Length: 124
Image 1 (tube, rainbow, N blue to C red):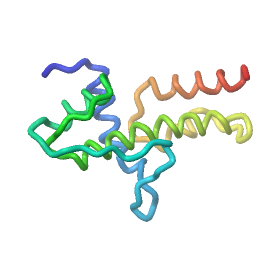
Image 2: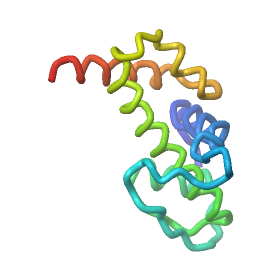
Image 3: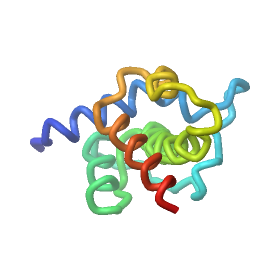
């Protein structure tokens, strides 16, 4: 299956940042507001399964369900964290780069999401 450059970049970003979804004691963070999905073992590779979830919201069986779940949780945690950073942005007075240094190789959309969320919070 051929994936877009954007999807490939995002997939690699989430792989590199799986540790972001874990607490220091190794437990999975549950702050993303959703339950942990159940994924069946099957023949699809993880990248295809993540694509189906990310693009169509479908969970399909894959060869490594644990990794797929970690990727989904990581995506949710990063999105949740962007909202949290934006809510406290004016209170802490740190530059945007301060927040992004917690992530490994964040793509440009992460910075743009944080900027947009901060602006959105200022409107309300």
